[in-house]
Length: 516
Image 1: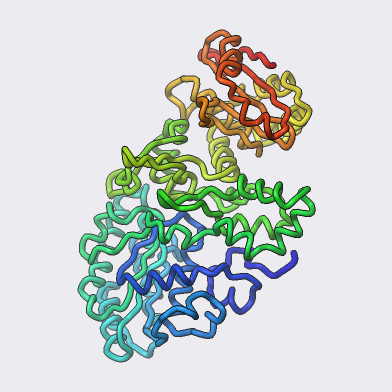
Image 2: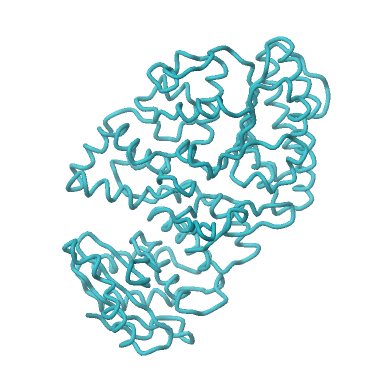
């Protein structure tokens, strides 16, 4: 490691500025935010830097100007003065145990803020304490800045416990109503979360905030753009590029593995900060760090409880309203996966006004495949032994060894999450195996000449695969030739392997294949 980086996902702005070598400057976005809005909601997946944004806002409103030397906001017009700040982190406790856990959590944060400004809180409900604190702060110190991080965490904690969920929701409704009643005392409100804001009746009692979650101007408020990565981490990139053959190849692999998140229709893609930091902190290894953070319990619980046709998730088309499908009675898998960070915007159709969703990158696709494998009967020891066989087969271009190993492994699959047997579902199961093992396998790859069923890319080899369900295998191979799916890879000097595969609905496995 060349420099001291916040590898463990440090979310404290002052700590990063004082103790670490790099802070990716997001203060121009934040300046624009606080200059134009009074009440803001911002949704992003877990571990994407929302808490760091909250910490940065807190430092601005607390007038910690010295921390911002050399950053963009220093040169922008801002009236630097101290505002009293109330900062709540609603993820600091697991509230699945009940409403009392929530009340204790909020009470501690309010008490901390009160003591900081020498205020004694009354013995009251959390809504009463909140209102009293805001008014007293305004009376003694001026308008108040309020920052609420992960507002929805208590609700998601209790999503599978209807009674507790309902009690928490009612408690929070009364708490957030205070914001509307105290509007004249408030300078700025910033609320973050995972689930979409507009559909949740929890906030019906407060002023409608500006939801910037899909705003192009703030799409890169969290996450690293390609330019930011290359600018702020040039020493690390130079060092690891030497070990990865070249700067260009290393950056291409970084993009493919960790980039790809898109949060607005016209926005550029960004990297997940935690994954990049962990990559640099592990000698530039390309590992699935996303899986180490764990699948959010609310998503895992949803799939366990409701089941799902998992293969439907890729290339799903959604209207903007569908992203907010979360309410007291029902949640929906695909919006939930977007909010959790497993899916992102891949494309936008102006004519229909709809978004196309997909996995952002190899890391997340592999992580979700690993998550599914634990629910589909894959044996961990078997995975380890098969990995080497598949790797050797792909590296050497041995199609027979590759397909025979896949056939053996597919026998382990349980299709509990799949109810309809189609070509696409077998393609999904096929790609799920490869992605879970760490290979880059894409399905339904769009090109100008049609959709290729599956593409597997290695450094020197590319495998172009067309799959059929209970059809002649010659038909699959002939389609590759007629559609010329391999053309985009010819100019790259890769060894191209064309493979026709037939799945059997009855056998639930590969029944034949043909290569050229």
